[in-house]
Length: 84
Image 1: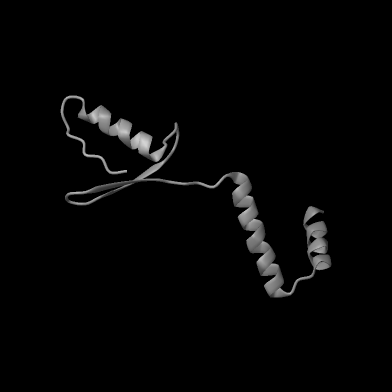
Image 2: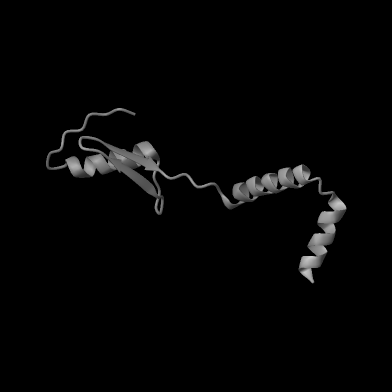
């Protein structure tokens, strides 16, 4: 979304409102700010949900187990051993 804003008496609040609106910001969202001599880039930090993070981690572990040639029974034994 490109928009030209002129900073006047209300410019500060309008600018913040436009940033919030265009990035879909909510309370406690995090942003990263990149600044140069004559520019500023504001980016919303996207964090996956806990279930998405777990799913991604599970996929990585499964891939690694397959790569290492670990069978399901070996994994079951390891789980039993760690739960003792």
